[in-house]
Amino acid sequence: MPEASSDASILIAVSWQALNRTIQNDKETVVCDSTVVILFAAFFIEANLDHIIDKLGIKEEMLDFLYGKKRQGEKYPGLQAKLGWFYNSFIENSPMATKNQKYKAGIRERLGEKFPGFEVIYEFRNKISHGEIQKTVANREDAEILRQQAKDIVNELFDIFTAKTGYNISRDVTYKNAITLD
Image (cartoon, rainbow, N blue to C red; front, side, top):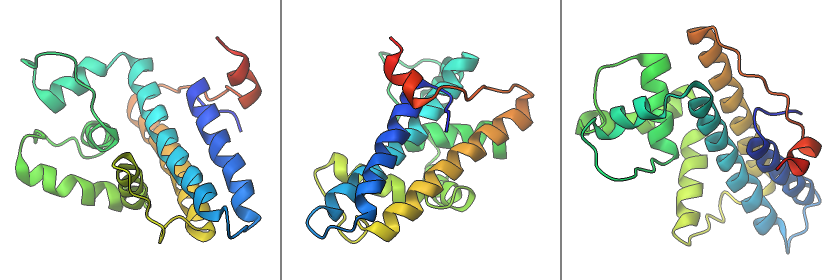
């Protein structure tokens, strides 16, 4: 299926290829294959968020919301922060700043309610970034479900974005095009 960017197309293809290996249910490789499925599904969500932000030229707006207008130095918000900004900007439109501890404590829960699977995907991704594999999640069944949920999240992001802005970001980059683009 075509995606919005080369990165997104390649990331979901890596997840698909690993899913096909996971479906073979080889007990010796299922944890590794499932880990790749879920991790690259998480990367897929973030690549699409980045693409939406870049396409509209609203990165500064996001950074102002997350860090304030007087921020210093380069800032690299993570997946939850970006999705929290998206939620605030396109769904809830709350004036709360992320520095507000009450907001920060509730945003993960709100994101999980709005985007089923996000909490598990996000936690899985973060634990890997700290060298920990959640073997209870790295299995065929969860990998299939979480990959589909990641795709559903991305579809919903584009639907919400289009409904709120009237701007349609095309999703026409195939995997074959993505691997040949410079």
